[in-house]
Image: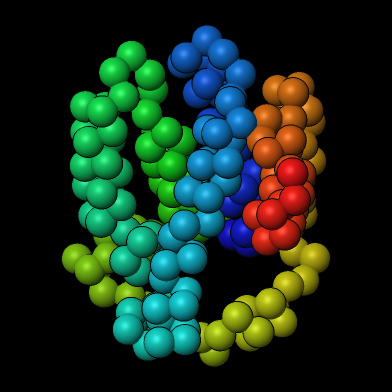
Length: 189
């Protein structure tokens, strides 16, 4: 799944969780955290595998439920102890990261190609050899208008509609960042 698909799917899942599980729309902070969580596995695994050759593939350490599950559980335990009465933001991060992993496995699971989803249990399940050069450029060169890509664009459209219905949480924060950075650099008020 491409980054935009991960973001859209994670936002949709988190919005459903916030509305029906917590009884409110997603907050700005939670939305930004779920967005970060939705990209986190690739931000860890791709550079460590493709650039530094530390990991065997771009879907290993941070894509593994054997790693992400315990890490999110530990973070939740620590956050819950510190943030009494409030839902820890780690829930948003966990949803983003876990939805990312399942999003990467989605097409393999639908096709019943379970070995292709083995990365979810790395290192217990060894990685498959990649048929694509392990680089960002090689992967982006593969973008074509496939049914999978069309599905991801549909997800983005649905997520945009839901984000609008939720009141665009996080947008004002992101739009304010350049001004805040400029004031920080120049000292202007």
